[in-house]
Length: 146
Image (cartoon, rainbow, N blue to C red; front, top):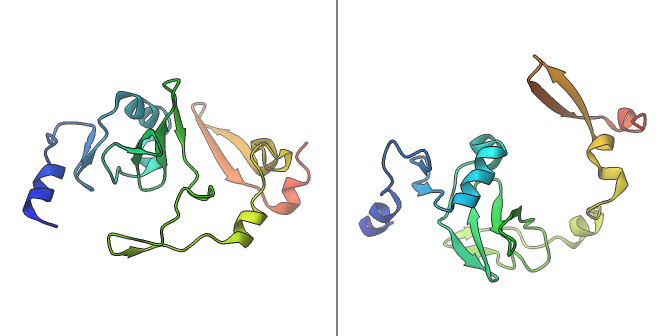
């Protein structure tokens, strides 16, 4: 990485809560920032690993665990990188990524499949009145959930 690139990525102020020194990126878009804050911040998304940029006509920002996409209605949606055509590359910037696996794609249940709804895949348990914990159920326990 050149010195010019490093200084361009680290221009956020140390007291700027939107700047993450761990990766050198900042969440500039207010809508992305609100989505990030309201849905678990670093714990859920990881640190930002890109600036905001255009991808397939949509404004996006990549995080360690998610990609946020700004929708035409102003809302935010996360992208599934397993969607066909979304990640057609196997090498970027010297990194190698696995190509699409048709077997994995074929085995993935469709969105809205009733066997993968939260009530059938997870148990919900309240702890300390203000915290909700979610834990995966075993296949034996899953069959007992209404």
